[in-house]
Amino acid sequence: MKRISLNKERIIPVLIMGAVFAMVLLFNQPVYSADRFLNPIQVRPVAHSGEESHAEAGGNVMGSSGTCPQLRKTSKAPDNYLSRKNPLKPTRKNLLAGKGLFIFDAKPTPCKVCHGFKGNGMGILHSRLIPRPRNFTCYYTMENLPDGQLFWIIKNGSPGTAMPSFSYLEDDQVWQLILYIRQFQK
Image (cartoon, rainbow, N blue to C red):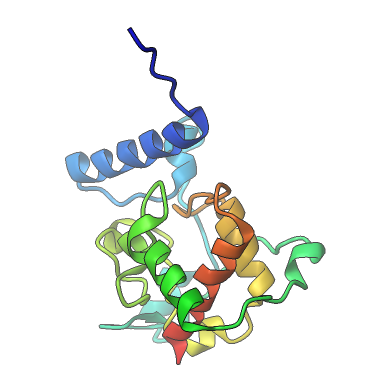
C-alpha cells in the first residue's frame, strides 16, 4: 500500500483559510484580522488610520467600485524590497499569467475572493473583512504604492489584515501578478 505524503507548507495555509471561511459562514460575523484566528488570546480590533470613521466623515467614498481612497498603516517593506522595480514588461503573456493567478491559481485562495473580480476590493468576502481588501482601481490608493511594497506584501502577507502570504510563488509570478493588478487603475 502506497503512503501519501502531505506538503505541510501548502496544506496549513489551506486549512487556515478554510477555517476562516467556515467561521465567516457559520457565525456571520466580521473577520477583524487573520491574527485573531491564529492567536485567539490576542483578540483586538485592528485600527488603521480611522478608515471606517474617516468614511463616515465624508473622506472616503464607498461605491460600486469600492472605497477610494483607502487610508492604511501597512508596514513598510524593507528598503532592499521597497526600491525594487518590476523587471517584467506588461506583455500579453505576462498579463495573462498574472490574471490567471489573480482569478484562479493563487493558493490558499485566489485574489479575486477578497479583492473582487474587478480588483475593486469588493470580492465575496469584502464585507466580512476589516480592514477592507485593497481597492486596486483607486488611483489615490495606488499612485504612490511602489512595486517593491506590493511584492513584499504578496510574498509575506500583511499583519493585522486577512492578507495571507503567497511565499510559494516564484518571483516572476509575483511580478506578473503586480502587472495585472496595476492595470486595474487604468
